[in-house]
Image (cartoon, rainbow, N blue to C red; front, top):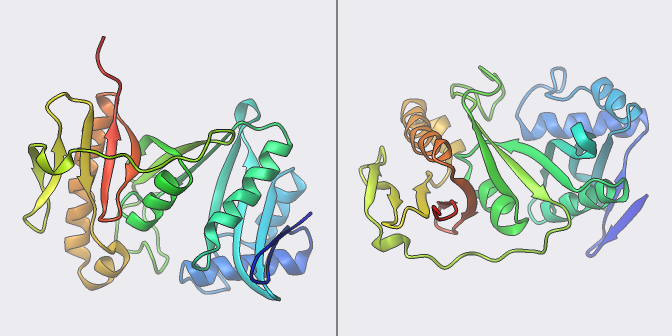
Length: 256
């Protein structure tokens, strides 16, 4: 199946050995690993496709510019193992994944991402309308790629309801809510409204750059954000939004 996109971009599922090898190389470049030691080897991708999963690839002309991998999970829902794309193509790649999953009867797609990467949080929560439902501490253990090396691999699980309408950012009173935690930079890290319906938590502007420049400071951010999220999730909150200036919105229903 081929899904054409504007500006010369097309997206299609990949099944052939050469195409899957190119996707594996693309993931190596994104995660800054040697192509001889990719995070997702071509033979693994081939096995996933053979087992009924899907590898979607985005092409800008003939150039590979994005890819995503999904498999079926329990109850007929889907799990997105990995997705990456050049700037501006991520939404198209995820929509191709959604069309594939819905066509096979799935209603929900899940995946994980690093909660400190604010741009990914905004894409997942604000643009796609997914919800962060689970905070996983050091999910993968130590990682030796060029993006995560030196940090602990906390991840946020998101659930994307595939038939849900697009969402818009919430208007909130974050700036007037009391501060509950301070960030490693000395400013506010978290705020909580007096009605206990919302918590807001800030992440650094660019954790990948910070991790490379000051790994110790990046780890302090990891621990600080972890504390806010694990406390909030234990109290029934979920992650429902991310602002353009790097603040998560965590929400829960009012007590009856």
